[in-house]
Image 1 (cartoon, helix red, strand yellow):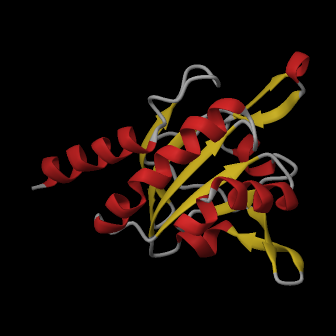
Image 2 (tube, helix red, strand yellow; image 1 turned 180 degrees about the horizontal axis):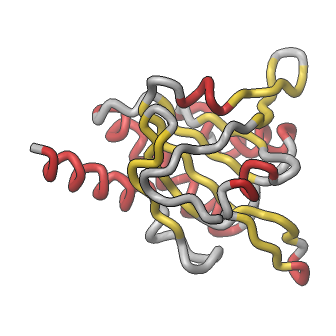
Length: 170
């Protein structure tokens, strides 16, 4: 089942690099009583992920923070070592983006955002998406139709959707 707006995200344990190596991160702890942007992508160091998707959240970071977003989290089906190095090389970590690894694709699969493309080495990878999550509930979900595209799931598009949502509530 693919996650949709209004659904509560499932419990998941992701991985991040800590001072003493990989550490488990309970996604529920990151989401409880918070407004979080969560975006997923096919893989660290891949073309569109590195040149468009991550940068789109770097340039919109301050705008999201001004809208009350507590944290922006990038999730990819990679190991935490790769996610740390990628976050450093793109300067996403320096910007403030949290890089989390879904090493076994458990979270990605649980929300129905997994896909495989064996000819390019992608097995159980993440589709490209971006969501606004409020206290664990998906408030906005933007999913790309193709993993090579980054328009619907870009930071700018999610920010526009958040602006529209706020105006509708006024």
